[in-house]
Amino acid sequence: MLMNAVLQFLDAKRNEEEGAESIRARITNVINGLGFDYFTLVRHPGPESQASDIMLEGKWPKGWPELYVKRKYAAVDPTIRYLGHSQRGYRWRESMEAFKEDAHHKRMERMMVDARRFGLEDGYVFPVHGRRGLVGVLTVAGRPIDLSPSQMSMMDALSKKAFWDLLEALDPAAHERLSRPVTLPLTRREMETLEYLGHGMTSNEMGATLGLSAHTVDWYMNGIQDKLQAKNRHHVVAIAFRLGLIS
Image 1 (cartoon, one colour):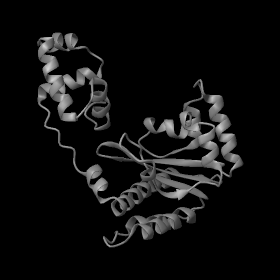
Image 2 (image 1 turned 180 degrees about the vertical axis):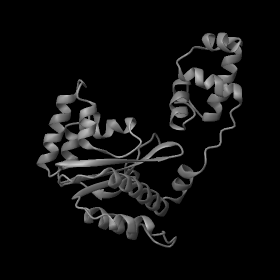
Image 3 (image 1 turned 90 degrees about the horizontal axis):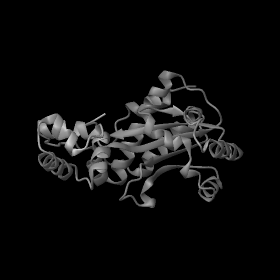
Image 4 (image 1 turned 90 degrees about the vertical axis):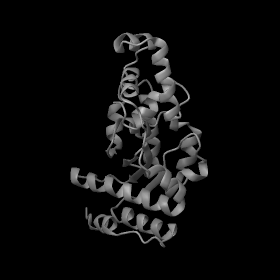
């Protein structure tokens, strides 16, 4: 496989006046040039996302999206579920292997059989992460194509540049919001409390460990919750994990 087109795409500096359609055309040309028949570049859906805003570019085989929705494959799709396990690109078969003991594995296999009937014989998924966690996903699919580790790294870079360039052209406000640095002035005590919360400790347990009363621990937790704009303690842990504050 020739990756020169990918290198050219990565080296090209986006002209601020370049419109979304031009960027879309460049993305489509480079991916099709690599031999992939289908691809989608999407924004990772969130609570405030509108369905019309999620798809940035790409296409699936005619009839596949309708069957995918009809059979409710989104609930079991291993290529999507595996996003939470990987920081880099992965092949579809890798996600299938990860869920071989899952209770829904038979439905996953059925989904893959249906996908092959539509020409989706194989594919890769490349997550795009920002300062606030997963923000987008590039999926390429079609005929089987073997990518080497170095080619996978180049595709990871391609997915990131394609996502950020196109998002900036389509929605500058979202681009600025997702790419701005995360500044959370947490105190040392708040960071300690957050770390213990991530380990599943209660206020009483944290208080005993830190030499504080449970009431004081709750006071720290309320401050953390306000700073993270979280709804509850479970939401605090989820946000902190996405931001890399805890691991």
